[in-house]
Structures are given as C-alpha cells and as structure tokens.
Length: 263
Image 1 (spheres, rainbow, N blue to C red):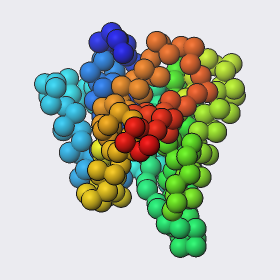
Image 2 (tube, helix red, strand yellow):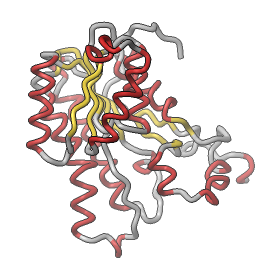
Image 3 (cartoon, rainbow, N blue to C red):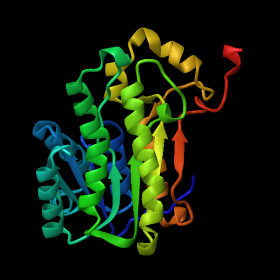
C-alpha cells in the first residue's frame, strides 16, 4: 500500500484503548502521518507510558502539542463526556475516531455469568456505541470512523459466543451508521483483525498453541499491530473516500483460505 507521509496533516484523531497493541500502533501510524492524536486508556500508568513512547519521535514541545492522553473507561458515560469536553477544549474538533477499546472474554455459554456478560458488553459494544455517540458533535463533516471488530464475526469459534456477539454488533453498527451519517459525509467502516501479536493475544493463546495458529493462517505467520494500524490509517484517509459501511478482514487469509499444510 502506497501512501503520502502526511495524509492526516492538520487532522485530529481519537484512538480509544490506545495504551498498547493495535490502538498504540494506530496512534503511532497517525502521528507519523502528521495527525494530532488523542489516546485513552483505563490505567493511568500504562497511559502515561504509552504517551511517552509515542512522544519519542518529537521534541518535548512538539510532543506536548501533538499528543493528548486522557484517562477514561469507555464503559463509563461520565468519563466519555469528560473525554469529549477535554478534546473540545484542546482541539475544538475531531476528524478521525478509531473506536478500538475492547476486552477479551472466552468462556463456554454455560460458564458466562451475568457480571461477565455486563463487563464484556459494557466495553466492547456499549463503550463503542457511546464513544461514537458522544464524539459525533465534535466530528467534522467528511470525517471517518473506524471500529475494531474481529475475525470471530465471520467464523464461529467455540468459547467465543459472548465476545463474537459484541464484535458482530459493532460491525453491524458500522453498516447502520454509514447510512445514518451519510448526510454529513462521515464514513464508517470496521476492521476485523485475525491472530495479531498483541498483549491480548498472548494472554489468551498459550505459547504451545502458537505453532498451531500459524499453521491455520495462509500467510504463514501471525499478524502485527502495525498490520492493523496500516489498514486503519487507510480507511481513515481520503484514499478510502469511496469505502463505506465495509469490514476489512486483516487475518493473513485465516477466514477465507485453507493453507496447504491443513489439506
């Protein structure tokens, strides 16, 4: 994929869940292309560390001008309201929203408790829904929203009923909002990452299972957070001006192709 190094010059981007993994990589990609970036996270220590990491490409003054880190939980509507007011006071608007914050939850349907249901739905669906709702008054006409979904909305996986349902919900949200926000020329798309090397991946896939995972991927490797970040930047940019209401699967062919070693 070819691109200008300044597709986001003068633009303001919000990345929720920006402290690690795909969110941090997307924030870094957008900064590299001249955006000013707001990142959020629930853990203040991790948020500060992420902001410091992102700021290493700039001197102190430019880092302070280009990066805004706001602690907040997307499942808490009051904290989303505070986030929006902080962005409004600092930048006055948004041009890009990457609704990325999410959590894993892999239990069989018989093991899912009401508390676990509320936790996963609260962050993965409610959090995404209200992040977008609260950000819309700040989002410029012609802006872009990218939602982080998952390959699990395309292919069933045992033990993922709750997680997969939340990801299917946010992908459907991209369809609906692409239509609803069309009068404002706001595009809404989702990305569906496959097996991506992130802290969440390592928390949920044992080292012993890594080789088996790679065997199932046509590309012969797991993905990187940067693979997803490049796709997010494309969908958020004017290069994707005619891409709307779509889901971009970033999985090395895991969903669509059967590798030869599996035949």
